[in-house]
Image 1 (cartoon, rainbow, N blue to C red):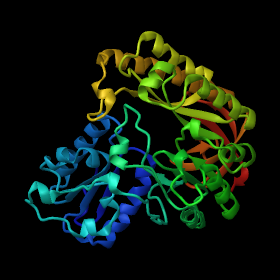
Image 2 (image 1 turned 90 degrees about the horizontal axis):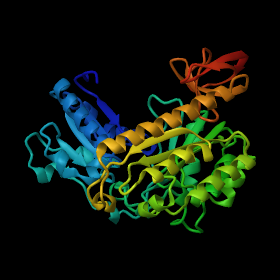
Image 3 (image 1 turned 180 degrees about the vertical axis):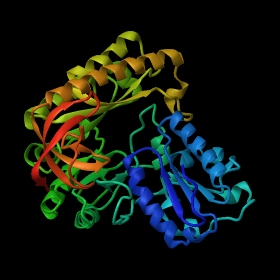
Image 4 (image 1 turned 120 degrees about the vertical axis):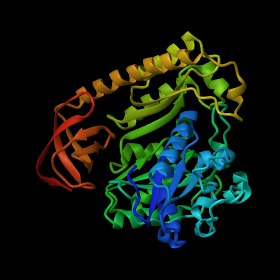
Length: 433
């Protein structure tokens, strides 16, 4: 991390796309509170709590930031700050700890305490479960990003036994549909060709709104009312909650990108039950099969946890097999990390070396599937959203090297091959959208 100038705000973001969106809100609110005028500048850490490793990395970055910016004011917020504020309060490097609700309000930054405050003044973290609504926070841009993220939902009503996130985000609450549409219009009007809808449990969108609209209705409404948006993408979804309108939109709307990242977590029914998931193995496989019939060529990614408590070799093999059975190509593999306060942390734990070995095997299977996916795209024509440094993403979210187009532009290209990591694209003449 480079040293800051004497004044200014730097926001360091960990974790999910929702955090990325919220970091832009935080930057704006902190600026309006005058934080950028402080001598020495300010660094805000927007943390993630999904794994113990994510928390460790945040603490490491905070310590490094203090060494390199001794005069800066350091503020820590996000899910890790919400779930374990005392651990950040105890850090001498930290000046202020804010909860997930407080971080989005300018007043939280205006009341920045003086150096040497006691722990009570240092932490401002309220009960996240007392929050009943998610306000619409309009942003004009997402710094450093070729695509823009739009929050549609926050929190989660489910209690998967491994997951600490509901305690960092609270119960599910939706952004009103009209506000989501207005935010998409705003970002599209500012030149973003691709908008990504994001949330904690996005397929639960609308249950708390009048009329209980579902995610599919929101998607169709956006595509109808914002004709200028070229690409609309969904972040992680729970396949068991996918509604009929959403499936219809996937089948019929070319501007809805043919890529879904699924919250599968495991491929064995007993482990899924012990995780308190709401789907089983067969439902996951059928969902992917049905979607391929609706949208040939659709690409699937997934989150899968290895080494969940009580997972046997045979159970793990089921997770390995589901990579092929669901046709997964973009895998996020998480070695199980016990999070204090969750039921799974109290279950019989596997040895760490077993957990790591299984994670390595699953990553290898995912890597092989990804290379096969790259090979299958050779000789095809793809629309690529240019991101940076000559790289971009296809509609199926596959990484591609492309020599034409500025960040944020969509380039039509023929795929000449791949290097095992990315597609090698040859842009067509006058193809920039």
